[in-house]
Amino acid sequence: DAGITQSPRYKITETGRQVTLMCHQTWSHSYMFWYRQDLGHGLRLIYYSAAADITDKGEVPDGYVVSRSKTENFPLTLESATRSQTSVYFCASRAGWGPDQPQHFGDGTRLSIL
Amino acid sequence: AQSVTQPDIHITVSEGASLELRCNYSYGATPYLFWYVQSPGQGLQLLLKYFSGDTLVQGIKGFEAEFKRSQSSFNLRKPSVHWSDAAEYFCAVGSSGSARQLTFGSGTQLTVLP
Image (tube, rainbow over the protein chains, first blue to last red):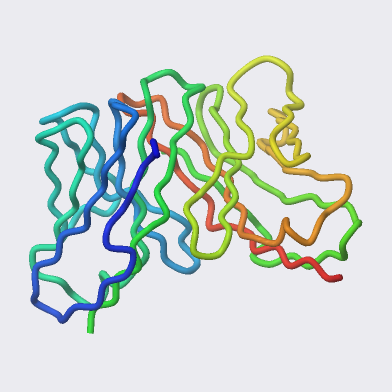
């Protein structure tokens, strides 16, 4: 089915470990986004990408790395996980630049760091 | 920088009652406004959007929202709530930046009583 998929859905890891969250979309949307969702904060933007090989920081980028070698994939890596990065992570995509274009969200990855 | 405030963290209504969820934004120009709904364990689904034209916008699932520039508000309404509407609701404003990032409010959790 077409859409945006995130994997894994759930992940438990330990502090100091590297972990990569995957995001794949089948629409060939230009824009992709990573958010984290924490109680009381809504969703906060971590990184975004306007096209393959073009990425930029959002509101809370520290401790995260992204890449986008292909239009359809936008992995998010925590290079050395910390407990403060325990959160629910959402990937989103958008077709173009126009203001009427909504973002489409994946179902999220619940990440726990012990 | 833009910001969004959802003053109500949690709202409880009875099934069949009317609903209004409040959203106030801060933005220097004409805002691009969105309402999303998140069911438990799911990603965010777009309910409706506003970027110009008629200030009363209709969305999916019987929801509507009214843009009031003088009050910097974009409140979500539904005349008769169904039990399936129980979810978390997020208001968001889109930026005018290159990626038109979304800034989200902290969300309103809706409980529906039978």
